[in-house]
Length: 387
Image (cartoon, rainbow, N blue to C red; front, side, top):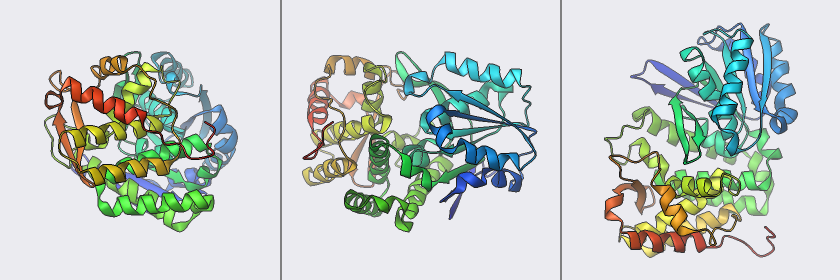
């Protein structure tokens, strides 16, 4: 088992990340062992699919703690990160009499984690919550760092709060039941983080992705668990230094670099009403577009762009995007929540492990259009892929 700690708010707050096999059966133990939690009630927020697979194990272990346990299941899908579903969750907490010391447990992927975390953040102005992420993408990204939120029709995650989970419990056994597309989405997020982190993390990520293509059992290997820990450690190091993503920062350690690939990704999700792409799949295309912009601006050499493209291809097939309306995508980009002073800031690459924040004013409309068309038209399909 691996255990990491993020020191936040001037070292006043600690977030602990535990990674290992079968840890879903020890969530109650982790709560009892923590000095942070003293709840009387625990609400497990999940969805039907995940709760059917893992809810019994989590509830069974929680029951041994002598706490009063509740469950609330939300609909499955990105489009349900909405005000309506948020209201239903908060009303449930109120009707069950939850108090400020009580606890929310988010059991699921990024959608569940974002909705559950935001519910905990706004109910009674904030009650504790913990993350038990069950998808690869959530394990290495959305469960780490304290961003919670919901979507608006004009853009993704435009309403939310920073609300840190003092505890993140990552059970790598949940990867065995993930559909192929969820794994592809998680692999894309791994590639994204490795590209902005270091050559070492990029090399270890792509090496294991090649091994997984020939032997899926690698997902349960010690090297892959170590890779998850390394991915979490990288994100934790960025979050610890810039917890609330200060808008005035543009250095290579700014939390904003974690948005590499996300500017285009969020636009793709919005213009397709969150019904076509998994988030990580959209990030895959977002990286390809960012790579094209980086090359066209003279920041990134052709051979490095080739490595980026190959890494995305290793993740697996992505839904087709070449037929999308580029004008609609560009209009959607204007609503990007990371805009500063009315201007989009793009996270680009000068090299692997060397991200650069570039003002949108330096990217001409023609260059942006060409880069979008090139990035979205790249196929990641392999021979024999039917999707």
